Length: 67
Image (cartoon, rainbow, N blue to C red; front, side, top):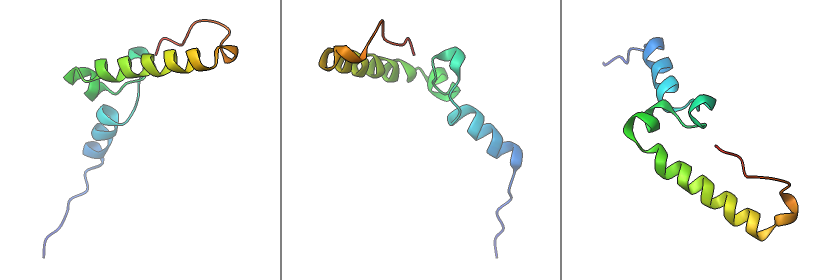
């Protein structure tokens, strides 16, 4: 019989680093930022905004959000 130890601190740390998105670093997780994987995500967000703005300019009153 094996037991799995539930460690609340480990669970919280995983959420804190890999799930929670931080407004101060443009709504990416700390893990993505630390590994440098945030650049691709932010570039994709910008492309989606630009494409949507080009397709429906009437929906945009100003600049796109700087995520």
